[in-house]
Image (tube, rainbow, N blue to C red; front, side, top):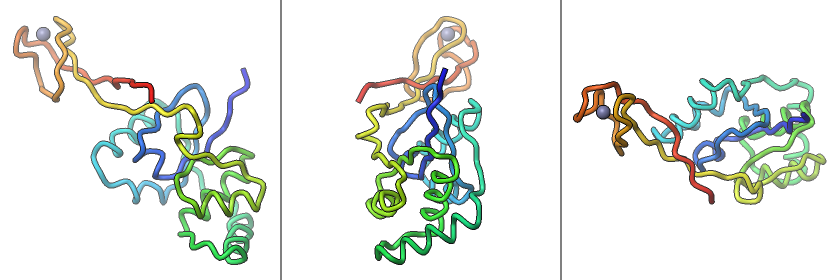
Length: 160
Ligand SMILES: [Zn+2]
């Protein structure tokens, strides 16, 4: 099977993007941009499922992207620049909601997509279920109020 590689920026996690069969990559700086609990949970879900690799891009490519961003006049953060550099290095798509990232990517022949355009958006909500009686809870609890078994969490998928 031919896996598609995607580089994800912080908006992918904030926007509810979830892993499928493909391979995902991001840069370390993205972690600092994920602040709300839901997005952090999504990110940790990527990590714990082994679906994402955090990688430092080639520094030569980082310099090249920086030059291109200056030429187009797009104001990109170091995180943004590193994400584009990583997408070039891996010959992958970049998923981003940021217009500047999309613009600079296009000047460097990197295909970018917004989450909506990617067509693979799934909004995640967590649901909690009892391992004993299978009762569903909307909030996390330690144990089931009916049977006392352990409550587990699973992603609740919703097609966009
Ligand atoms: Zn139960």
